[in-house]
Image 1: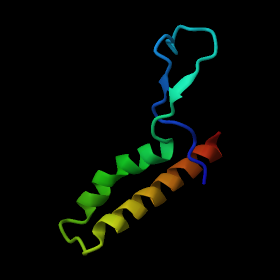
Image 2 (image 1 turned 90 degrees about the vertical axis):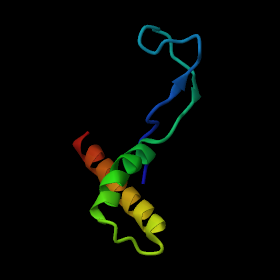
Image 3 (image 1 turned 180 degrees about the vertical axis):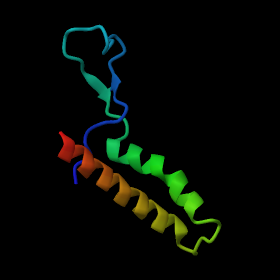
Image 4 (image 1 turned 180 degrees about the horizontal axis):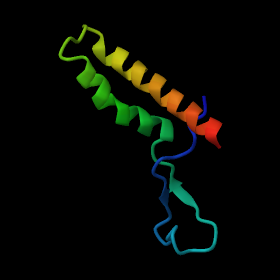
Length: 80
């Protein structure tokens, strides 16, 4: 599964990605879009558990968040 690029890349300190016309050098790729999507869905997954959390809830929740993120990326790719 592709990560679909960076969610929040950081460009060189002398470059403004909104006004510079030359190509910009990315100095830090930041998190991936997949990571961003997974992080955004975590609160909903946690809330849906209603306090009934099994002993290994963190691993299960993280895996579910990435499954949903992968589905979001697949849907995004199919629309492009």
